[in-house]
Image (cartoon, rainbow, N blue to C red; front, side, top):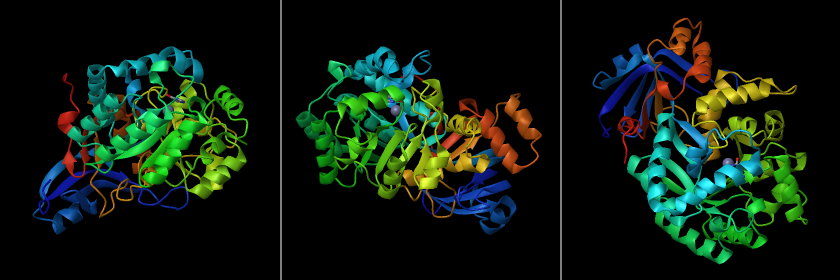
Length: 439
Ligand SMILES: O=c1[nH]c(=O)c2nc[nH]c2[nH]1
Ligand SMILES: [Zn+2]
């Protein structure tokens, strides 16, 4: 939308301008609501009748029967793993060896990678995700293909070349010197361009020598405004192996700390089997944890202790972790997070407002994107518009919903790809990119 041309978007609105884990009344809902957008930014949110009176010249859009939420923020997802979703019967290390790493090796073929990048970006959008922190490829050409596609479409993407120099497959290994040079090139080409940012991405300590982690730390010192992502404390077998490989480390987190990789721009995926000391150090560093509930359950890693993270003040957001995760929907991750807490004696009781916060504003803050994640005036207009397919169970449940909060609970429980009608990034509809079509 052009700056100075106001658009008034009508829908049922939900957002969490406050943190429901710390403040009451965090969910703001308008059952006949509107959003006024000026160019990239939201200028007003509220009741439709009031805003129509105040912004009479605004072009009208939207649909009062639809549901408008902030665009979702996926803080952990793997681009090369689209076609691995649903690989059953395996836990982490076997799942990597048997199904996932062979597929990741196929991205050496640039044509294969380009096609996959298009599918991956489209899958995020089709699920209402407008911002993502993405594990890229081990191959620089495939990594560039992802950046190119995200730029072409207009997605907000933070990503980087995945680094490993042992224990995967030879074709996925690099060496510290090559890793340094390649990351430098990719950072100079992509970091800060369009809506893209670079994240240094060692796969996990298990697959990285001290020298490779050292080089990652050196890159982070040389380029202090790039991001950092990796895996941490996911499965018991993984943690045992990491302890054997790093006999000097007091725990898993220490393997990253020694090389200066634990800071306020660091996002650690999983952190299921975590020790108290690690939680305290993550909180002190201001790092964030990407909680990936569907992956934790699907590959049998375990249940996430949200209570201990919150008690220590560790920032938590949601990740789909495709392909260990069971799809791209952050609505589904919200539901799985809810169920995961219900299953634990000391689980945190979550409601629709918590799920929405985790899927939107918490992710934006974890990625340092203060201007994203809710619908407050001044924020970027990153949005997802949901409407149940005619005749669907969701339509029936929503029609009889007793309250806005109950409607939001129904959306998390039942709304999936089929209900996503439109997404906007920075005030621009990306609807044209949701549809199929080979490239
Ligand atoms: O869930 C995960 N998915 C992966 O691809 C991976 N690699 C290392 N550790 C991992 N965990
Ligand atoms: Zn992962």
